[in-house]
Image (cartoon, rainbow, N blue to C red; front, side):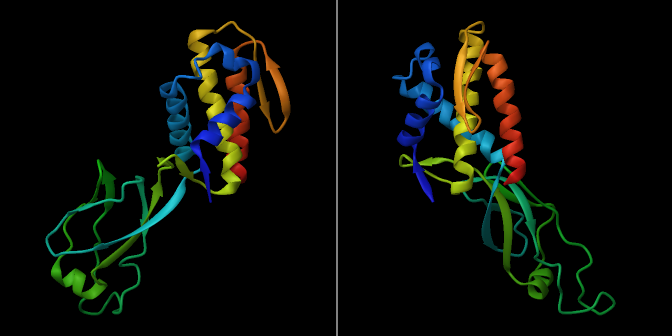
Length: 200
């Protein structure tokens, strides 16, 4: 499922109501930054899981990672082996795997015997970043309201810096609420976002 970035921004501007007059919402850099920051927050708060497969090569320790990865999660490679722990050929030590700067790193390069016994296809799960591609955001329907909430939080962060003493209004699942300051709104939105994330 996907949503258009333009539709998300339109919904955001409606949801923060009169607070939009305090921002230059015609500035696409401002609105794009709001959406990008909210997507980063969503990736951390309610991450999506991606899957990828690497063709292992003996002696090779570093492999290119998918574009949308932000953290390595886990793999089942090597957990089940065709030989028992006390039999010859059992692999007793597997490399640790991490992600950094666009690459998957093995703590030591898989050996030819390791690949021969466990297979060359290393399939793993990773935490995927939510991002905008050609104006579209791929996101599960159940997380769309949370994304809008996180966008509202980004608006309040800007207003904390620009108009810290101004009353603001937000529209959430609890209805339309007016707060005495952007900071109060930010705290309330943060609490609601964490509550929603726990239900996903």
